[in-house]
Image 1 (cartoon, rainbow, N blue to C red):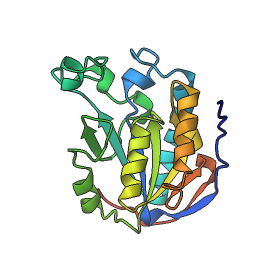
Image 2 (cartoon, one colour):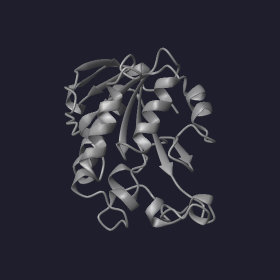
Image 3 (tube, rainbow, N blue to C red):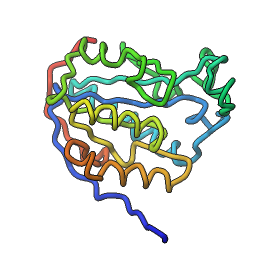
Length: 213
């Protein structure tokens, strides 16, 4: 049986900047640079300027910006036992941020060793330090890959009771079918109560005072 999927209609949202955090997921050379070993292609080239523009708007409005950086140790069981493709090894060029989205002005980085930005990372302690609170804060999730680390981040923030927003034009996947499946998940029963699919130009911000990190 063939099941056809369509992207959900993006929703316009108005967010209070003081309660908003932009999360930029894994925009690293290996997948996001044309010379990267696992370059995602035109799909990622198109989202880089969109995320950069959204970051400027969040910063100007007084919101928070956080990056995740996915790295692996050379002797990770993922490689040595499970024989997965060796990638994003800690300290290599491939694991560095792509130039146009390097962290700026003290933007925090959460280093992670799996798809999950919460598992054995400093994400929860960082959120506590920044005053990002469940049931109050708005998390905009961008980056790559839509059905990999972005999906894990959406799930992680959703189950921890944050308001989550995913801009269609700020995530990418090498295979378009995978991105469609991710967004189909985000609008399913288990997610739609606190996950909203939007688009970067449909996000408006109410001003807030600049917050120091």
